[in-house]
Length: 72
Image (cartoon, rainbow, N blue to C red; front, side, top):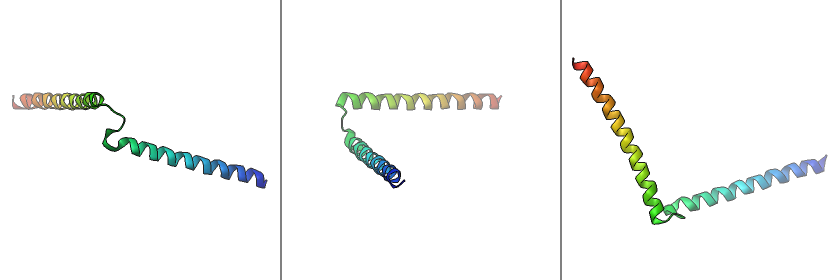
C-alpha cells in the first residue's frame, strides 16, 4: 500500500509543478503584449473599441426612445 501512496504523492507533486510552470508562462506573455506584432495589437484594440462604441450606441438609442415615449 505504501507504494500506491507514493505514486499518488508523486502525481500530485508533478501536477502542481505543471500548474506553476503554466502560471509563469502566462504571466510572462501578458507584460507589454509580448508575442504580438504591432498590427495584431492595433487590430485587437480597434475591435475592442468598435465593440464598446456599438454597446454605447445601443444604450443611447434605448434611452432616447424611453425619454420620447415618456414625454408624450
